[in-house]
Length: 79
Image (tube, rainbow, N blue to C red; front, side, top):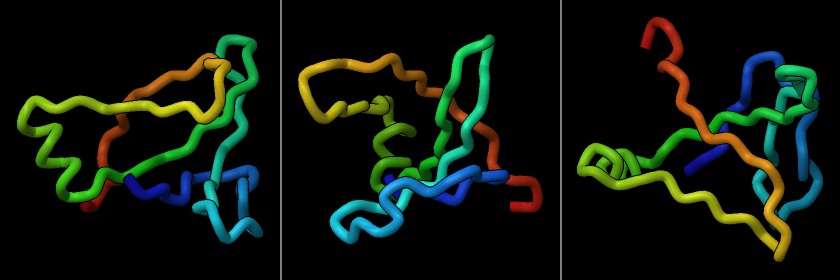
């Protein structure tokens, strides 16, 4: 998956770290909890995997698992 530029991004993580993708995020508050939201686009192979009953996999670096949330969003209008 490739990170996309999220609308109304509030900052970009790893912008100057060449070994990582720059990740545009939007800082938000959801139900009184601070969150950081990013948008990702599946590659064609990943879209095929999902269409054929595959699943989304989340990998956390390290040994502690932070709270996470995976959702979907509709395609931008006009596409």
